[in-house]
Length: 193
Image 1: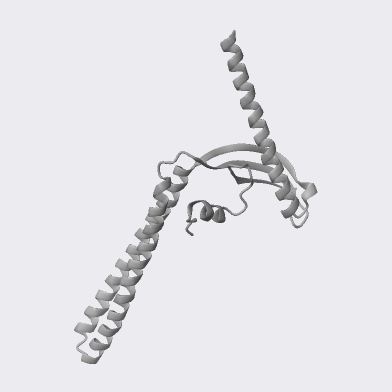
Image 2: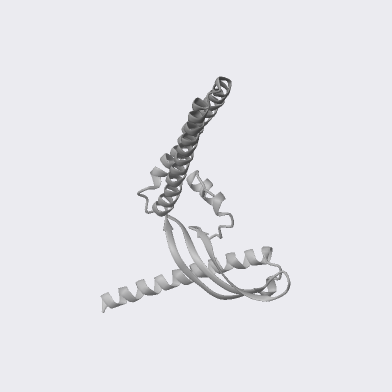
């Protein structure tokens, strides 16, 4: 009997907290709608579901993967340019024109210096961002929530449209309007485009 009562209290408190959190999220959405929609009075919430709870580890992994892809793109770009430079140098060498060869080699030397700096500096910057994210790599602390938000509202021409979007809500149950700014403030790095 005592065990059953304890389980019932736990379930009741969980439901109460869930309802309370959902109410806070709905209030945040209502405030956003009031400030940003063309016709806030036409807004009608159809459904709001918690989709995912994102921890710091998940964010860190995602941002790190983005940066690893960027490093590979930089290295591939530099590799392609070096191959182009090799072809230009070979053409200049076999052209038989001494002046053309000297001019081409000077130009290629300048471009080689620029490429080396690009590779070194760009990779270093991105690698520093990866190192900054490492402190979150094993963190299970909550970062933010993602909700699926389904609603109807009038668009700018007055037509009633049904929309589905994903909202990000921080741990204080406040709507994250600028996710890039949120990431920069919280992790020191943002999304790559």
